[in-house]
Length: 237
Image (cartoon, rainbow, N blue to C red; front, side, top):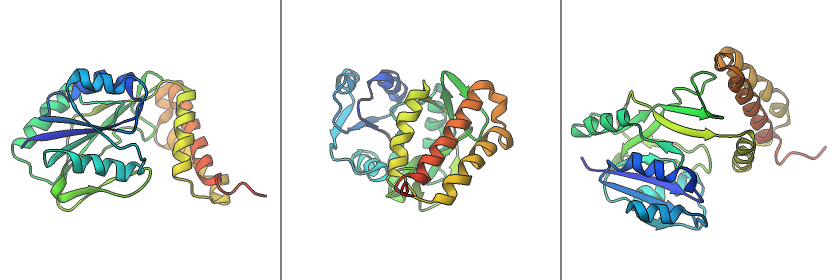
C-alpha cells in the first residue's frame, strides 16, 4: 500500500527540516500551509515535497481533513510540524502496510517538555489514530482536540513518534492560551475545582513526580490551562 504523509504548517520552520527527513520514506509528503511568512516554504521546496495552501483557517479538524482530501494515496499518516517519525516507527509502518488488518492504527507519542522526555503524568504513551485508510476514516470537525473517526477495526503500533512539545514555559503559555480560546467552555464551578484535580491527577495519581522538576512544572501548567479553558467567556462578576 502506498502512503501519503500529511502535515499542517504555519511558520513551522524551526523543526521542519528534521520533520521532513523523518517522513521521506513515504511515497508522498504533502504540506498544507496556512500562509507562512518564515522559511517554512523554502525548507519544503528544498525537500521537494508537495505544498498546497489553505490560508483561511478552518479549525484543526477541518484543516487536517482538507489535507487528507488533497493527498494522492488512500493510506494516510498525519504528522504535526513538531513531530518526528522515528526509524523504528518507519519500519513498523512499512511492515503494517504490506498487509493491513485494520482501518486505522493508533501510534504512541513521546513528548519532550523543556528538553526532557516525560514518561509519566498521563503524557505517555499519548496514543492517537495517526495511520489510517481515508476511505474508512475521517477527522472530526472539532476546532481543537480533533480526532480521527474510523469506520472499521483499529489496532495499535508499538513504536513511538517523537514530539517536541514545548521548549520553554513561555511557549507553553502562548500555545495553550490560543488553544483555550478555541476550546473555551465557560463554567465557573469547573474553573474553581478542575485545575486542582488536573494537577493532583497528573502529578500524584499518574506519577508526574517521577519526572522530577519538569513533571511538576508540566502539571502546574496544565492546571493553569484548565482554568483558562473554563473561565474564558465567563469573566463577569
